[in-house]
Length: 394
Ligand code: 13P
Image (cartoon, rainbow, N blue to C red; front, top):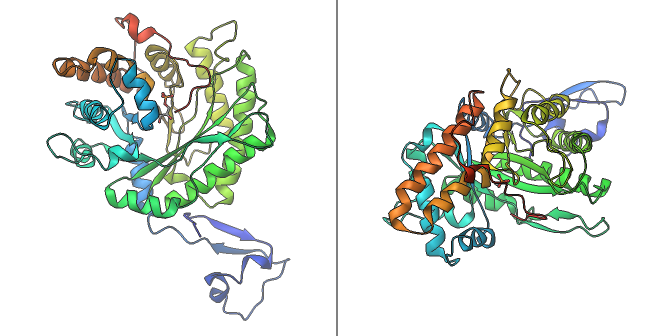
């Protein structure tokens, strides 16, 4: 059973006792009745203190997450965009370029890796996880197994990966990972159906409980896709529904809120909506949903970029940090940190240094946005280009 919480539960029903040590703690002398309110502690994960510390460290001022957990297939698409083959050697070279960037730990507190990278080393034989630790960056791991069609829904999908997750997570912990990521998606043009939302929320909650039981801080990521021509108000409505279900099931699974991180999409109009929204409007709608649905016990909100341009993602984050929030509001970007890097690198060794500089520029820009001090002055055209892809898979 995965129970990672300091919380106490109030039990009204005797069915809560009998299958674990709670019953013996009662001593058997005064049987519980449905009319008597008894407070029983939920077993705290042996990792509770560590989970809280890891989450707090990732959510530290001026820092965010570099997401490089593209599956091999998706990484292949990135490499193809600069004319490289999708080989293990090329994926290693690219990840090595990113992770050996000097000074990265000043702006980046955690990096989400794909399984291959977690077990990989640099060409000099240094494990990527050791490299990260020395740079003061916590290694994380994508644990979901991707999306498949959800039967009975409106052409929606659900996320696989719960089978065997506990043993996989324990192995990832041994290898040095301290946080995990599970990305599921919700599509607005497809409904979303009540079934798809419930399935997404339940899957995230089971994953979160299993991760905490094995020492990994779960990043909870129900991505509400940008696809569609709906207005921002519709995204707000769907986001509220999704987050309320996610927190309902997280609580039901006794997940320790102090030991999770969220990875939401920003509340924007659909990518095909006739009008674009300003960073201020996006910030206002996004923070409205979060304040309504996310308890302040959660240490950090680490946004995904979802196909926004590098500059858009940074401007929107900056707008959200113009006044204090109950949680650390930061970034966990993949595309919005990597686009300029790839374009600069082009797979050439002589471009590695320049590509690392462009990663540092993006990381610093988002660090400033986390502190509410970013300005887009001087940003180049490439960084302003949108990266939205209809029906994007990760
Ligand atoms: P993007 O920032 O490219 O949307 O990536 C999201 C993600 O889940 C990466 O871990």
